[in-house]
Each structure stands twice: as C-alpha cells, then as structure tokens.
Amino acid sequence: MVRTRRPFYRSRPGSVLLWSTVGLIVLTFVIPFLPGALLLGFVPLPPLLLVTLSAITILYVGVAEQAKRWFYRKAPDSPSPVSIGPSGSRP
Image (tube, rainbow, N blue to C red; front, side, top):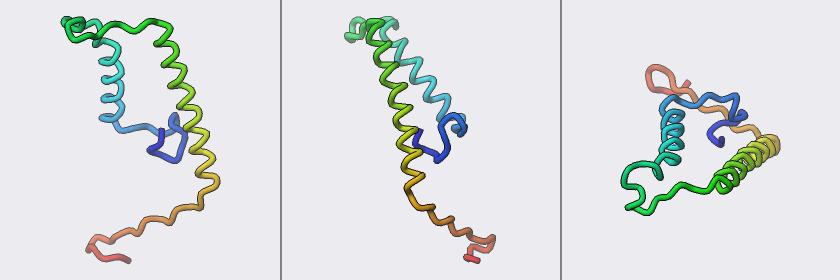
C-alpha cells in the first residue's frame, strides 16, 4: 500500500513480498485447524468476526489510498536522485 506513489493495484510487488504475504494470510486462517491447535489455545474465529475484520481491512486500504493521493497532491515533488557514473564519480 505505502511502498509506492501509484495506487496499489497499478504497482506490482516483488515476488517474495507477494508470496510471503499470501502464505502468511493462508497460515493465519489455517492455524486453528492444525493438529495440536487446541492444546495451544487456538480456536476458529466466528464467521461474523471474520467478516468484520475483512471489512476493516478493506476500509483501511481505501483510506490509505485516499491519504496517499492527498499527500502526494500536496507534497512538493521530491528531487531526482543523483546518478553515479560507471567510474564511481558523480557527473
């Protein structure tokens, strides 16, 4: 969400970031159903709570995108980075 100036759906994340995020989301939902989860105190969440958490997450994404759009509209353009030539010296 906040790693780029563009909207999140127009900026493709690196494959490691994408797959680690997907893997952690799946693991989060699977943990209560693994053997031994009850021994550790894990129980499945009620469906209404899952819906509520999903709605909060969707609202967060929307608000973060709006805040990012507002910020970059108000913020002055950042200076371009200085490129370093092949010899290690600045042009």
